[in-house]
Image (cartoon, rainbow, N blue to C red; front, side):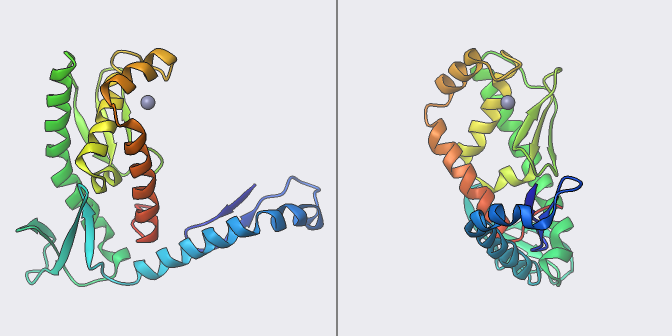
Length: 208
Ligand SMILES: [Zn+2]
């Protein structure tokens, strides 16, 4: 197994008894991928050492200004953050995204659910890094804080994906067909989410 960690370390796990020489051809074959991942990890590390100049929120680049009272806030079209590196500020940034994002997502989920004649349960913003959203059997919806970096259209596509699970609790062909009918620009939204994820990585914006 081969991976590049956020700390810019290449990790290779070998089955017991397998010698290093045996995996060298595989490493050489994946060299461009490893190099690309290392560069991205190093850019993330460098970004984490400084306070960001701006943060992506609902598809807009929101400027970051110094919080003179030392308290993180989002007002007047700007994020206010105290002194510190991105790593130090990350918990405050995640808290801001959650505080701003939860009411927004709750409102979008209620509106879209009404359009589809269904009802959303509780809506929460989590620190999930692996996926954009999830839906429980009771219809409670969770969304990753990272989703709030995307445009309103792409955010809606994920909310609709989760709401569609209230009709089909799987990723069957029937689910896919209904999702596509509800999100005509699904491919463009997916492509945007892929770019948002890459962008967040490059900025060093990862919860863990
Ligand atoms: Zn799903």
